[in-house]
Length: 253
Image (tube, rainbow, N blue to C red):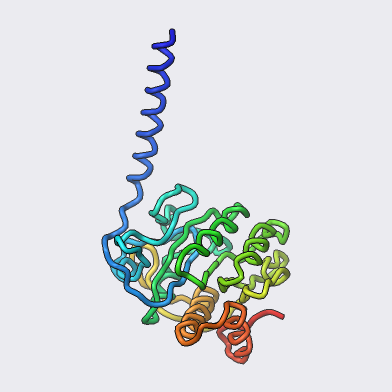
């Protein structure tokens, strides 16, 4: 009886291990490469297509060439977009487009973090991970949701004050969390009308307008400031919000 129980336990463990391995193989490996250097920007989204050469070459990496990034759902270093660019706008949309826009500026490298945007703790854990990386700028393109759902995020944002967090303002009855919470290191971006070309999941180029362009422009401006000075995230946020005359971004008061 004991031997049968051991055999059943080993068999079950092996099956679970095989299932995990199969699930892992469904996501492509991160292309090999070296750290490109530059200001690190974290992108917290539902994943990206890191197989695209233009993105793979700009991924932040450690001394052994391993990706500095994380998939909070699968708990691995493959934050691949399983939704293949079809996430709804309130969940961030196509994260690869945002990554493409962020990397349109020289001197920027990417720290991708995959989350489940409908799980409040996932966003807080993402910020905790980012705080352990070289990134001091975090872009979160998620917009809608009830204010109470973002309490863990607010607590994490308040705790990790050295990370500048850039989020969209949202609109309509489902007011975005950040407009109400607004810790000193959170910069809220009002939707703009500026457009830009960007490559989305699979490398398909398209003309993009609105929030992805606006939040990426703000993040690139923040990266430029951080490259030139050693100011805190709060100081950079203040400097950016004082450029409120720009149609691209504006910090909510």
